[in-house]
Length: 451
Ligand SMILES: [Mn+2]
Image 1 (tube, rainbow, N blue to C red):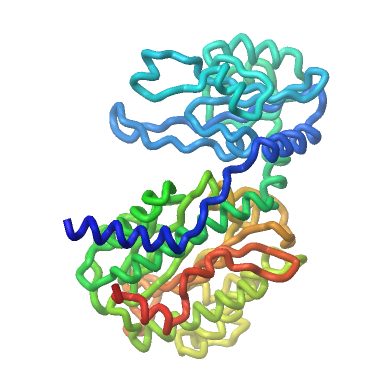
Image 2 (cartoon, rainbow, N blue to C red):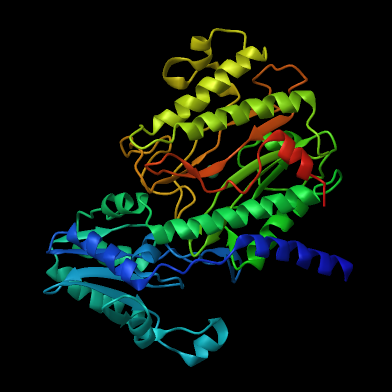
């Protein structure tokens, strides 16, 4: 009982620091998005936005469904099924296919608004029962000359489109650009998601003790999300010791040692909008000299990366800023024995990449790795930073003791450090949305284990 009361108090502490949850995106704003989208479509075209499929977790049990971000962006639809179609009929219309009411089925799987409820409560012009999608959508497609559709999500729709059209255009070329710039209402939701994740990280720091399981820190953070009607935006990473050197480690199944640092990369989602925070701290509450040296280097790089988040800068400016600091620091610490030019290499792929092997950040929004480019391998040409963009800055250094391909002094072995904040680009410079989460050495040492 004591534990239950205690846990409740911990969550309430977060609640009181959190402030009021901002309103969901208004129908008015979604109508504006629809207009902006349709204005860029040819008048004889049809655009289809499908939902994400339901996926099997085990036999007849499904993974919790998460709506498709494009569908949610344009219509606010958040249930399973649901297909939006934009067509011109004197004016642009948004038609939504939804499951019809069915008391027997609703008794098992939950209430449905049905066609009437969807028409009344969602910002759409027409609703049609999903059962009739074959004939109804075929009629629309026959009249159209161009089709915009994202294949691979809805097999029924893929088939219908494939029957009528040889060439399928991609609506993402229009929608991704729109989603890159966040509105005030979106920023308010993202600020709330950032605050909630920041406060959850603090609670995990407070509770951390040697011998505890990584999964127990995970439970504190994710419990905190759920308590505030939120959920994780991506599987939480809680890695101690060598596990901190695995970039996407999320087994979270080891007990933590006194001498380890633990890396937590966890963020939540509020009405679809993500936050994404990484903090690394010593399990004991006190960094060793070696851990501290690496930590302070990564922090210096992260602050340099945030400093590069200026309107008009190319996307690569942040990565260049963090890379310079890290490469020089690795030389200064004696980890790299070469010149700065050699450490950085051609095109920032030099020797320092042995220890910092990922990008400096990504766009953030309805998807944690949001659309609009900026990630390595993305085909979108490099963006320049503009007001209303939200991105992460997350340099790291990783010295996996398990790695056979690199030689490192044992004093660095088993140290993995990443520090990640969410940054809003403004004309007045970068605004760190996750600033409620401490990252200075003294602040972290004061909090860890101090419940
Ligand atoms: Mn991230």
